[in-house]
Length: 90
Image (cartoon, rainbow, N blue to C red):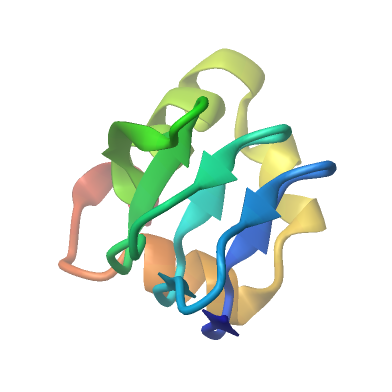
Protein backbone atom coordinates (compact mmCIF):
# COMPACT_ATOMS: atom_id res chain seq x y z
CA UNK A 1 0.00 0.00 0.00
CA UNK A 2 1.30 3.46 -0.89
CA UNK A 3 -0.26 6.82 0.07
CA UNK A 4 1.25 9.80 -1.75
CA UNK A 5 1.68 13.40 -0.59
CA UNK A 6 -1.39 15.49 0.24
CA UNK A 7 -3.69 12.47 -0.03
CA UNK A 8 -6.47 12.04 2.53
CA UNK A 9 -7.92 8.70 3.62
CA UNK A 10 -11.16 8.96 5.60
CA UNK A 11 -11.82 7.17 8.87
CA UNK A 12 -12.52 3.42 8.79
CA UNK A 13 -11.54 3.11 5.14
CA UNK A 14 -10.01 -0.16 4.01
CA UNK A 15 -7.21 -0.20 1.45
CA UNK A 16 -6.47 -3.63 0.02
CA UNK A 17 -2.84 -4.77 -0.29
CA UNK A 18 -0.93 -3.28 -3.20
CA UNK A 19 -3.29 -0.34 -3.68
CA UNK A 20 -1.83 3.14 -4.27
CA UNK A 21 -3.53 6.45 -3.42
CA UNK A 22 -2.22 9.20 -5.71
CA UNK A 23 -1.07 12.69 -4.80
CA UNK A 24 -3.92 14.96 -3.73
CA UNK A 25 -6.51 12.17 -3.83
CA UNK A 26 -9.34 11.89 -1.30
CA UNK A 27 -10.82 8.57 -0.10
CA UNK A 28 -14.22 8.98 1.56
CA UNK A 29 -14.77 7.65 5.07
CA UNK A 30 -15.66 3.95 5.24
CA UNK A 31 -14.65 3.26 1.65
CA UNK A 32 -13.20 -0.05 0.49
CA UNK A 33 -10.44 0.69 -2.03
CA UNK A 34 -9.81 -2.28 -4.33
CA UNK A 35 -7.94 -0.48 -7.15
CA UNK A 36 -5.36 2.29 -7.39
CA UNK A 37 -6.75 5.79 -6.88
CA UNK A 38 -5.36 8.23 -9.47
CA UNK A 39 -3.86 11.54 -8.36
CA UNK A 40 -6.31 14.41 -7.80
CA UNK A 41 -9.37 12.12 -7.64
CA UNK A 42 -12.13 11.75 -5.02
CA UNK A 43 -13.43 8.20 -4.48
CA UNK A 44 -16.01 6.75 -2.09
CA UNK A 45 -18.10 3.65 -1.52
CA UNK A 46 -17.81 -0.13 -1.38
CA UNK A 47 -16.09 -0.77 -3.67
CA UNK A 48 -14.71 2.75 -4.00
CA UNK A 49 -15.53 4.50 -7.27
CA UNK A 50 -14.74 7.93 -8.68
CA UNK A 51 -16.94 10.77 -7.41
CA UNK A 52 -15.19 13.76 -8.99
CA UNK A 53 -11.80 15.41 -9.29
CA UNK A 54 -10.18 16.99 -6.23
CA UNK A 55 -10.35 20.35 -8.02
CA UNK A 56 -14.13 20.03 -8.43
CA UNK A 57 -14.50 18.95 -4.80
CA UNK A 58 -12.50 21.94 -3.50
CA UNK A 59 -14.44 24.31 -5.76
CA UNK A 60 -17.78 22.97 -4.48
CA UNK A 61 -16.69 23.22 -0.85
CA UNK A 62 -15.56 26.83 -1.31
CA UNK A 63 -18.91 27.66 -2.97
CA UNK A 64 -20.81 26.11 -0.04
CA UNK A 65 -18.66 27.24 2.87
CA UNK A 66 -16.56 30.12 1.56
CA UNK A 67 -12.81 30.46 1.77
CA UNK A 68 -12.87 30.05 5.58
CA UNK A 69 -12.65 26.31 4.92
CA UNK A 70 -9.22 26.74 3.33
CA UNK A 71 -7.62 27.89 6.59
CA UNK A 72 -7.53 24.23 7.66
CA UNK A 73 -5.66 23.11 4.53
CA UNK A 74 -1.91 23.30 4.12
CA UNK A 75 -0.52 25.70 1.53
CA UNK A 76 0.86 22.72 -0.40
CA UNK A 77 -2.55 20.99 -0.47
CA UNK A 78 -4.20 24.17 -1.78
CA UNK A 79 -1.50 24.57 -4.44
CA UNK A 80 -1.96 20.97 -5.60
CA UNK A 81 -5.76 21.31 -5.69
CA UNK A 82 -5.62 24.59 -7.60
CA UNK A 83 -2.95 23.73 -10.17
CA UNK A 84 -3.85 24.76 -13.66
CA UNK A 85 -4.58 28.44 -13.05
CA UNK A 86 -8.32 28.14 -12.49
CA UNK A 87 -9.79 31.54 -11.52
CA UNK A 88 -11.96 30.17 -8.71
CA UNK A 89 -8.89 28.81 -6.94
CA UNK A 90 -7.02 32.12 -6.74
